[in-house]
Length: 117
Image 1: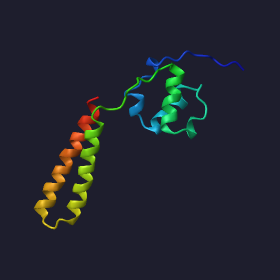
Image 2 (image 1 turned 30 degrees about the horizontal axis):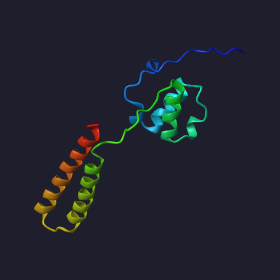
Image 3 (image 1 turned 180 degrees about the horizontal axis):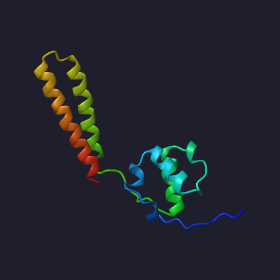
């Protein structure tokens, strides 16, 4: 019984999105199908799966990955939580609609800030 040893490159995996954006389920399927050198993938959490794949291919994380807009995002999310509580107490339909739309725009703003790294 001889096993064939094949060289796997990162480009040969054919990833459509970055490892950090993949779900744990997608990462497990990728590892089981294409990277047999990683053992125990079915019991690993997402962060362990990502680091295992990066270790196999020798990918080094860039330092300073924290968003420069972290404080702004935090304050916007705090505002959103307060507005949600306020929306639950308001009885007028128009006011609830206004609050809902403001919350929606704030959520969009936090997503844009998070992406603007």
